[in-house]
Amino acid sequence: MTAQDHTTGPTRRAFLALSGATAGLASLGMEAWAENRVEIDADAMGNSDLSTEVLVIGGGMAGLFAAVKAHDAGAATMIVSKGRLGSSGLTPFGKGFFVFDPGAETGTIDDFVATVSRSALGTNNPVYTRQVAEHSLDRARELRDWGFFDQTLANRPFMRPIDERGIPLMERVVITHLIKEDGRIAGAAGFRLDAAETVTIRARSVILCTGAGGFKPSGFPVCDLTHDGTVMAYEIGARVTGKEWNDGHSTRSVNPAACFDTWGDMFERVPSTNGVEVHHDLGVDINYRAYVTGNPVEGGPGAPQPTDEIAGGPYVPQEFLRIGQPDGGGAPGKGGAPGGPPPGFSAGSNVGGASAGMAIHKSEGLVPVDDRCASNIPGLYAAGDALGSHMAGGIYTQVGSSLAGSAVQGAIAGEAAADYARSVDAPSIPQARIAGIRNDILAPLRREAGYGPAWVTQTLQGIMIPNFVLYIKKGSMMQAALAYVEELRDHHAPMLRAADMHELRLAHETRNMILSAEMKLRASLMRTESRCSHYRLDYPEPDDENWRAWINIHKGADGSMRLEKQPFDSWHS
Image (cartoon, rainbow, N blue to C red; front, top):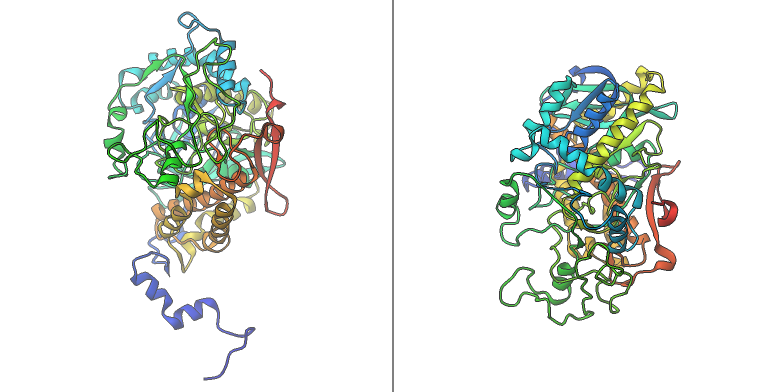
């Protein structure tokens, strides 16, 4: 056998073939690197070329109101949803709808905004906090007229205003790319799940109502949300915010995937309205207890109790805030003990992990540049969990505000997008541009061999979901996790393979989750303090001198991820 030098040696694929590594990995059942046994001929697939004035992407609460209000404002409107209208994403889970009724509340809207700001340690955007209070009652009345509060499932009441207005609806269509031409939004592209066909939609304005996302954790109905809208917008230059915050919905340690058992009462319940109740839900404190003591996080012998002494503690619990109290009934702004959780941590908060990868509702997503849900890309809007409005800041302060905020912001974005659409001409997208996007969409189907998206997702989950990475943070561990995520980004994502339309969806979702993981790690490393649902062992105190600011992320001209501060006081109520 002749020796091979480093410059003329066998290719990687040849080496794998010679070594039997491909067969070896596949035989282990890991779905790692393997031959792509394609069931669909990508070169024979068709393409639907459609157009509208306002395109709404997403079929949840925000998407419903965005489409209705854009149509009622006189714009030709279309909805495209990865799932069924009202039956996918987090909309089916939400059963509480916050309503601020001036006739029933003892405090004013000013009191409500001030109380949320105290609870959120200043992390909220008071303009969007005020909006949900001002418009929630009107949105609740419309939902009541459509029958939303009379049924457990949302599809039928959601379809009523859509059918009445004749708004075109495309379900089970995965949008993977936003299209920008001449500096403004021009449309979107993706593919159908139930047919071998790509879809191109030209639009004068686009509203992202794509929800948030996670790392497909067990125990919470966030598995079909993977930050698709956020990543698509980031790729064309939009700014993203709020990635360091963490949602803390819980599940059981036994049978954690049985979310319908855990949340059965929620899914079987008819939606209802609720009034003001501002409090502190973080989802980090019991993760902290488990981290320091090793005790189980559920009840029973040995479980942490509210009065337990914790190494590095004690906790600094805060009572519910009461509207109109000068100090809010708690002690926001006071630091916890060195090494212990920051202010606001109490033993009664939720256990984090079931919604791993998702931030507090309304705290992550596209950065708004005005009070009408506009992004920094002209013609591109976002609403609900796709908009980083920081409506409640980095803490979950108001039961029912998630659904209400989505409804309110969807309506505002719909009217704003319709106004914008009237001011611009129909976009022109070169055919070469469309062809390039189609090639990018279908690349996993054309790959002769590659990494299975399920295997890459499992690898990502193992990196990001442990509580000592995502919830109980420290620089050294996050730097280590970031190295793994960068490897997935640079080496595995470009070689994701797909055999059919379902696996094609998984490939694009996996890529989106990898980029979101990078954003979460970089933002968490940058914020060298503990505040609200972001807690660092190595920086356990709030730092008001340096960190009264949100962290925004954008894609640099060289393709790298750039982070910057935006002061809290850049918005005023």
